[in-house]
Length: 521
Image 1 (spheres, helix red, strand yellow):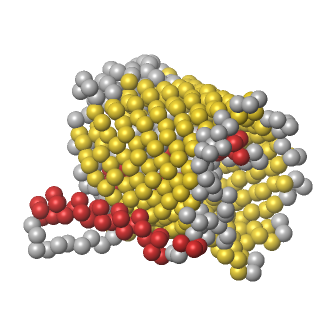
Image 2: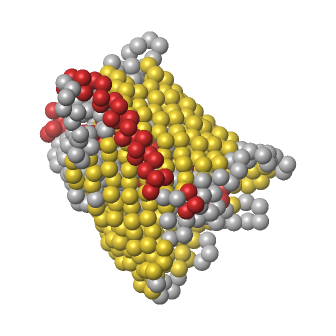
Image 3: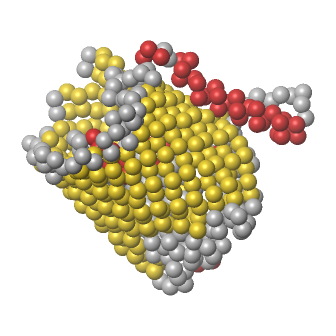
């Protein structure tokens, strides 16, 4: 369900004045109100770190138990500020959003269930953050505005999860879920070693299939999920499901004609000195929505192509963490995938791969982690042949890999450096620098995070001006765990756009910042 929130009208001021002056103050006020509402509604004495980032505290929020029932909830507020451009268009704005999630679950012997509701809301979305004459967003404010019927203030409520679970049906540590649930690839088995768990959770999971948690609306799947632990170190996972709406639009209740069938084999190889994990995965993706496909073909060719998309993805990843005598620890992560199938009338052949390395020097005061990596995702070099060669991310959580979300892992190259510092158990500081290029100048520059409604494709694409250079950016984030239930996060990222983004000889600058409060119990 989706509603348009009531907007106050100053009445005594002319419309032009309200639009040019008052709107900016309303947006700022909404962002501040949303941001600090969790603090006003809760006590600092009850306060957990923002989810899906490396935990900055070992403390865990304890849910409320009512007999055998378990009640848990999350209240999140975020205020965002953008200065963004596409070509010659620029927008500067701020807006706020909130999310309230509440879940009730029960586990009795082998049988269990969970029901969870989500209530996202957005305040002061910009009505001028789209490239004139198009639906191309100037930052995420434009994406939310366009996806929610061009409304500045909007809220929704829907069933986020509702499933039955059965444990141990194969005499192993197995779990079968039937119904609506969240799912992401790469999280089939969480390693026991903390560093290895961070690598698989942050640099593998959500790359191709994810719950899009960062948007605060997210996505779920209606289907069946089976996970079985074979012994202490091996896991087999099978999942099939239909994706729900959501991600950018606050109505996340219904389904889309988008289906996934997924399987993975995961095995850890622990030794007295090293920790490592191998995953082999395969999945099929089907998109039967009758919407205009986004690729490098001419508009007439795409309008004439109403056939479904069917893609098979086959891949492997391996991560290892091992000590170096007197020098701390080093880690290596390798990930690769090959795709085959049908992109409407075209055959589909594409691939992607990444290599990352890290070093944790033994400096006790700040516990630094230095990392570097390189990624490529194939592009389509010939729009007139019978093959679609752009690597396709079906349903990812894009912000996990592009914290400044102006690109995807499609037709791209991303050269990355990371620094993570943890001076205390409550603080974490993280900074990244990225050099982002397009893999093929004959393809397009893709934006988005996958299908989210039945009326649009889920990705946008822009011409690259005949250049491969997309942009360089540096960012910084700080997480502070106030108590076991209350966490704060601040993020800022600054972009220097290159030739594919702008024709200006010295490029253009853009930026994005947010402040977030999350309270969980």
